[in-house]
Length: 132
Length: 137
Image (cartoon, rainbow over all chains, first blue to last red):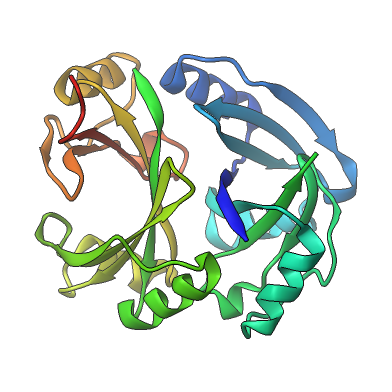
């Protein structure tokens, strides 16, 4: 079951510029900045009263974020909902007729994650996370 | 000061279909479905958890912001909205930090007084601020 909005993923071209922007807007520093080599990106996490903003900068043009920016420009990339049990929730989504990108949870930044296919969610890339 | 993430706005081609989809995804009915003349749109609002909302927006005119967005980019995530205490003051502060504004002053929106920042100065993300009607301040 979807419990809450966990975070928004935002594709950015230059993480340093984006850090300056979000620090200025939100008045807080990022919780963390890390390299995510297997996803070909660098990520910075901000928190706004319990919801995270995940800024994602590609480190190679052929990763998901690199391709997204190439085709659509920077901007909102995905929405992530928090669930209790990633594998059970992915199965429940499939039973409701929603196509999955990930049939089972895999390791992500904030816990075990799985993506739904945006073709069956009105072109919104939706991620589910079972947090650690 | 930005207090919290209030909602995420999503542009959709067909509100009835999207309401059905989000009912399945979220396992609940929308809080409300209504006209949003301020954005030339029809909106359906869902609650997710206790704190945040998902706002589905269907264009109600070809010249609307949502209509133009869908024409250029297709349906998908459209804006994010942060809740603030004092709208006019907050817009002024953002301008003082070098952020271009679409609205120099708050205007009536779905959840209260709203104002948009110019995505040209927020790295392609359309950011809305809202001062909620039921806000204590």
